Length: 193
Image 1 (cartoon, rainbow, N blue to C red):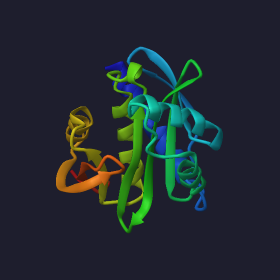
Image 2: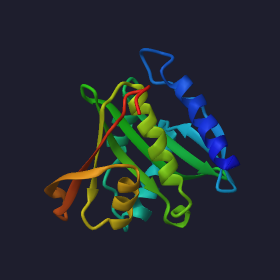
Image 3: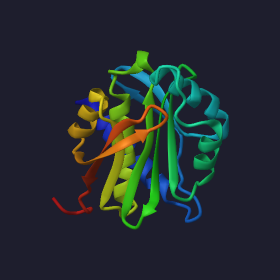
Image 4: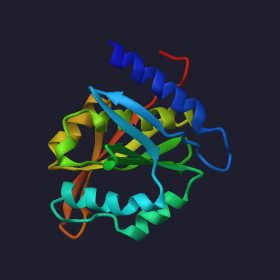
């Protein structure tokens, strides 16, 4: 129970710091004890890209779906894009990103990856909950994401968080031509049940 209270307090501190500056989403780095391990949670910066690419290689069987140029572009859009990285003993073990300006009142989870040896520790859940809170606080009513139709583990995480499949996008992942599900979650407005 203490871990849950600590995480809730941590999440609220982050939320208070995110929208302090109209020209850039703010995020203050924090140390977090999660499931008995201490992690450092930070906003991603350009020097993190090499490690983000390596995480992709390990998660996607040697493939790199997003290259350095794409990550540089995403990280430079600080007004409405937020990328978080998780470090454990100075090793980048996970990252996730959200685009808060894709459509009015909608947000899109752009990317999430956790090193295979750190999966199962709820790091992905923590990152997703933080990004969903950011979207809600930004006034978004809907959050979307894509997930490979074969990725049952990720789909289960997203369903647990309240996402539902709204359509199949054929040949979404290139060059393999793998299909993806478009999943969405409606967000409650603050102050409503």
